[in-house]
Image (cartoon, rainbow, N blue to C red):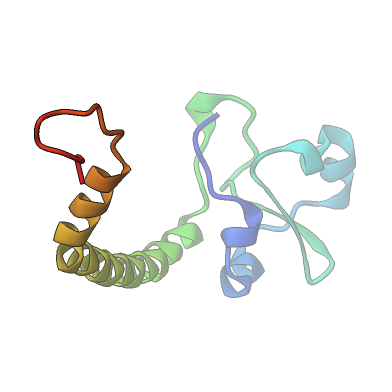
Length: 120
């Protein structure tokens, strides 16, 4: 089985357009245990697959899932921007206190009674 996204990451708009699984098939094949099962939406079981497949060669995801790509791309870009902003703040703070932090590390070193006096 190929990698897939979890049901909770599929938007309601997309879930509403996914194929409905007949109740007989759900009971017969145990769809609720399948990794491609999307759960119930509007009281109808839904599937991520174009047609039900139990082997890798016939796995074809429903084309409507492609609409999630731009949605998650935008979310990823926003998260990346936020991450880079936080990283810049962090590195700036480290730079501001770099000398002080080095001095604190020296003061923590144990003194061995050398000719220079205390290490710190």
